[in-house]
Amino acid sequence: MRVSREQAAQNKSRVIDLAGQLFREHGFDGVGVADVMASAGLTHGGFYRQFESKDDLAAQACDRTLQECVVRWHEEVEAKPEQALRDIVTRYLAPASRDDPSQACALTSLAAEVPRQNNPALTESFTRALKGFADALAKVGPEDTDEARRQQALTRMAGLVGAVILARTVSDRALSDEILAAARKGLTAPLG
Image (cartoon, rainbow, N blue to C red; front, side):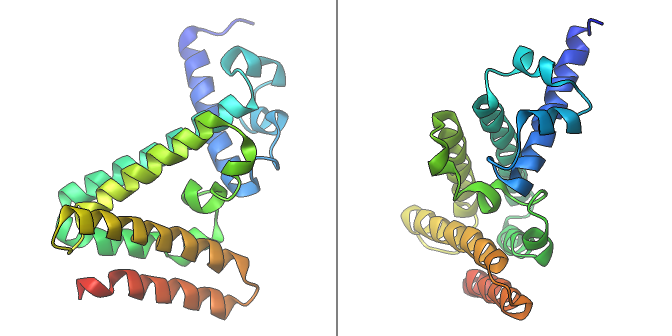
């Protein structure tokens, strides 16, 4: 049965969204094309009409999820610049972000895997996202100069991503909570 172009586009979009969740939850190597297609309720055979390869899907899925988050951060900064940094840090370092990688930022779930994937489009997606996140944070930092705000934004991004990764890594739940709390405090301390 042939599907319309509109239905094909909707199917592709659904596959990209589901792949983004599955990759964040299980990693790139923990998810196969068949897994993604089955989760979308589609046959494996239709995959190659929509994507060149699993690498292509990974790049598109990560790019979509990361860029959606970058856009949200910029919108938040524009809407509430005086409150945005504290809100972003608090939400990023919430226990829910640690506990559900499938719904968390792809940076915390997949960044360590990206260099091993040998996928230039994927690396470019993560690079573009990191720049976008840092640009958003640089707009709201309390520092005096553009250069200082940019440096602090990169430091905050490293702190956000690193804290979530470390909090997921340890077996001691109290220590994990302490890592998130310490990072929240440290990354918002200059705000008073």
